[in-house]
Amino acid sequence: RLYPLSRPASERPADPSARAEPSRAQRAMAPAAAVDYSVLTPGMRVQAESGGVFYAAEVVTVSDAKKRAKAPVKVHFVGYAADYDEWVGASRLRSKALKAKEAEAAAQKRELKKQKARVFSLADQVARYARAQKEDNKRYLDITTVYDGSKMKGKRVLVVGANKGLGLELAKELTNVGAEPITTCRAPTPEQEAASKQVIKGIEVTTMESMNKMASEITGALDYVIFVAGYFPDITDNLDSMQEVEAIKQIDICALGPLRCVAALKAAGHLSGEKKPAIVIISSQAGSAKWRFTQNKDKGGDYGHHMCRAACNMGGILVSEELKAVGVPVILLHPGFNRTETTRRHSDRWDAEGAVEPSIGAKRVLYETGKVDMNSTGKFVNCEDGLQIPY
Image 1 (cartoon, rainbow, N blue to C red):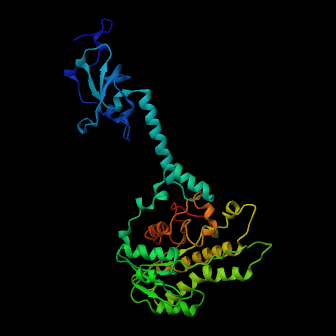
Image 2 (cartoon, helix red, strand yellow):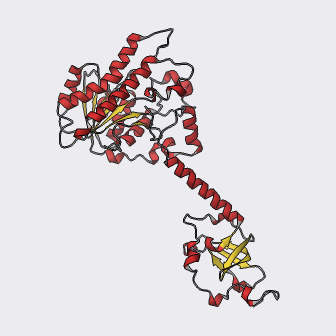
Image 3 (cartoon, one colour):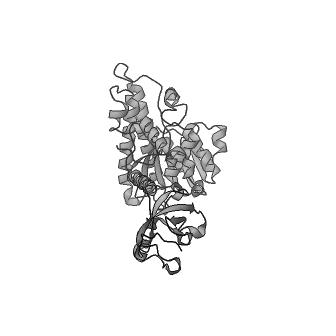
């Protein structure tokens, strides 16, 4: 075996025939996260440990074999015979390239931790969508990566307002996954009838009489109630064009409607049985008073729309508090920006703000619906990213 004449035996790599297993201290040096060894290439200069001392070495090869998982890098100690070549792992290597990759991995880990610590969604819709793209947020960009419709199989779900748009897509998706959607409408469409286990016709959410009729036609226990019915007229609504009649109509449908629905179900005994449904009220980010300073900055407008959704949210919070005693959870959901006839007036913003087809919006809503329990009752959640929206 060849040794540099200037090196005493005490400074040579350990004899390969006498090498011991790494000490407990050496093993403890190994990083907890998986190391990316792809940055190491044959011939790259590194420092490798042998006998507790680090020596100048060169990378011979990097193996991806499972048996080499703990020590995948073969190194050659500079100035020593090939007999001293050894397979080593990260705890016995020093390399700027490896440290840079480890630093990158650590930064990514910190960023993921930061993302998981988020509580509230972003008010700026364009910035929200852009952030999701930058972070490659699969939850936001492709709900199918987390959504499991089989969890709804066999569930009895009341969908109030399901003859078109999001309500219809919810009924379709529920049918597709084996659930039993019970849907309501004023007048059904063939699509709604095909997508429903039961259709309750002639229902108006603007009267208690109609809501009581709906409740009386439901037989058996419900697992979920999803109130979708809404109204957003395509009008100019500002201080120069007051729309008080339309504003009151919006409040009647969007704010009092869910309240009447829950009151009717409670009166009919649907909330007091052994099996209690979770109640989901489809609201809108438009109901966040705090977000008006961002989304309506320097312009105001759409008074009826924003006021009715804020009233809807207030009603939902109060209902959640009243029903805590009987163990019925209530949650308010912003379904996200969906490409429906209602939002077509804003089609110029669809792409920049990440609007999705209502079939995708339905999956987002059902994903959040499946998570509702008493721990989430009273919350206002954005179905796009699963984060809360401030009231």
